[in-house]
Image 1 (tube, rainbow, N blue to C red):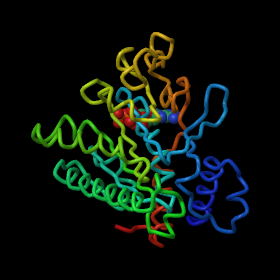
Image 2: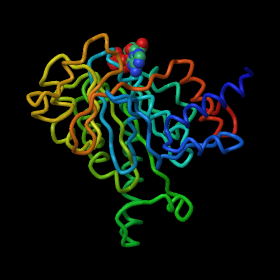
Image 3: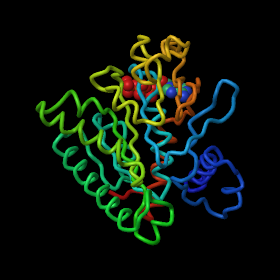
Image 4: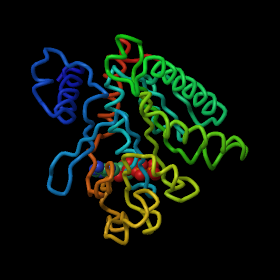
Length: 297
Ligand SMILES: Nc1ncnc2c1ncn2[C@@H]1O[C@H](COP(=O)(O)OP(=O)(O)OP(=O)(O)O)[C@@H](O)[C@H]1O
């Protein structure tokens, strides 16, 4: 199979997975972009049913012990967002190598540098305030898909991996606190302005994910944790005693996690798996959709 044909086939498979109507892609002569307003495919539940969530107007937290499958899980919303040319991607990569694959699709890419992260967060907050000014002036409460054509405003997906790198590891205490305050502000106020935060950490502890921040995430995805209390830190207090604990996930069950979606009960799901090769191919395809070629800076 030639490279363009292989990429087209890959994107077609992806679209089939992420859209509720497979016809959306099959009828198109060429694969087109996804939309951030469409549900994102995350994996399957215990009954083999597909699990899809809508990311717009929400935030997502992914946490669990190292090696549990967060990075693979994170690639699903990131990949969907990258292929969605109706949103902008802002990537904060404390590890550099995790989100780096999607760099060419990002409007802004921040590596493991706290000064850069603070500067980008400041810009994002300014953009959020600008959007609220516009909404206020028009007596509206939230942005909609129409804002792309009428006001040039598209959803922003801001992805943080590993969030603890910026909030607890590098820099001076005041800077780390400034980072945490800015992220909390985006998570708390960003949704209606079309700013979506997706944050991942391998440190599910109360200093990294304080309750007041955790409660702002509509989607909480707990991969394997070592203690009931760390599982509760991700999902919410009391779930472990009610039988929903990510401790119960066997270490060999990579990619399995408990997903709490908007006030329901945590659901055990297995994330869809994308190999490195697939991620590379999708990232290249997404870059090509966004820039008209495969290797944009
Ligand atoms: N859904 C899945 N299906 C099959 N294998 C998976 C799945 N998710 C993860 N794995 C396997 O588990 C390994 C570790 O996953 P991943 O790198 O996502 O963990 P992580 O939690 O991000 O680790 P770290 O915190 O150290 O970065 C992967 O290399 C892969 O082999």
